[in-house]
Image (tube, rainbow, N blue to C red; front, side, top):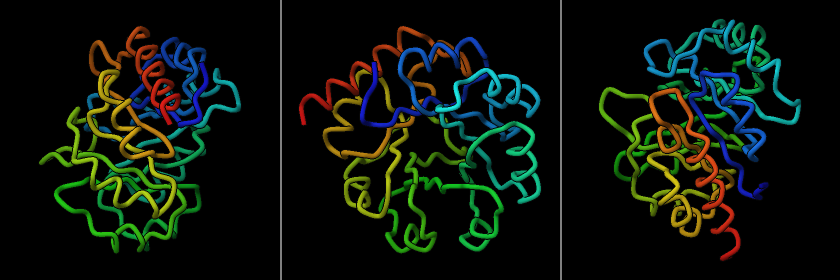
Length: 210
């Protein structure tokens, strides 16, 4: 089942689960390059999965305050298409990178529009803020913030999305895409095909209501 709304499944650790996601209709796959994450996957393991994927699948490496050298080398080594900057990376750092990137912002209260504008990016991601954690929290944030900020580029909506709430999120925010990790898992890093199917179905139902 294909959807107009981009679906990004993040935190993949298994090749068979990545391929299943693609077969079901997921367009973007995310791999965690942050070593403190419970979904962390070393570059050589990511490369093994990426080489098995169809070329049209967009692959994303999630980084948290990594050096430019590390980000650039891992993308080259793995074949990942783009870096998701999910830490505290500055606009200057981001624009100096020699690889494609987009910035993830953790929403705590009202995220300032000026912060998003300062990165001058086509695509950005909004995620829930959780003390001491950089993404993958399973918590949602106030979608009214996302609605207010969606005109600043192509918005990837993340944060606590699940099969039972993603339809409402899409109808309220109308994002470019939705990003899910724990919402389709049986355990950290292990994707449940039934939950993935239910998530995609809910996205399609939202689109049918537009």
